[in-house]
Length: 228
Image 1 (tube, rainbow, N blue to C red):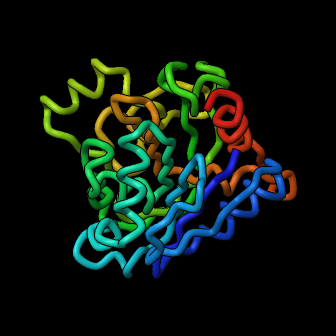
Image 2: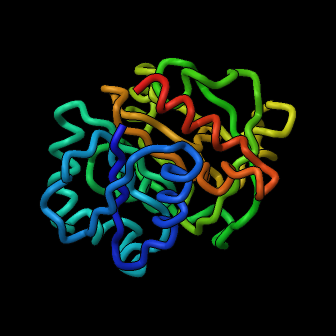
């Protein structure tokens, strides 16, 4: 599979993602610049974490206007795979490829720490290879990660089985104490109705190398490679 990793001004996790996809997962990777208007034949687009355009206005609000995003939206609308991590998730919601919004964390502070997340279902390529009852240790690093959606939209997301990850405790239990940012329903990631666009706030690329003593995130990439 050929992956395309987009770099925006302010991205800071693009090279981490490239490293994991190339060196650990053994995939071909094309580096895409935000001004590009050609996806260069990639099968799977990744929007990495960081602070695109300095997070001015709202996180992702300016990045959605980049020339590359027009091609990413076309790719997704044709059924092509797209994944956004952290700031990439914010860009996907701003672009309308995913429902909801990522608001300021409920304690109004930037949070950088390990969290645990649990797959909500096995209905998507990103979770199909994961254990439903297992808590995966994946770090977060964000100031605007509180998932929000109006009641009718949230019900639609639930009814369509679009929640892919929930924040949880180390034992897999889901409660307020394990919610790091105040996200509705402890939501850490969602997919679109077509199940080809994925967004998540935690960083699996930061938990995919044995040198970091945590490879829980590698399982997420393995699932994508097996089922996409």
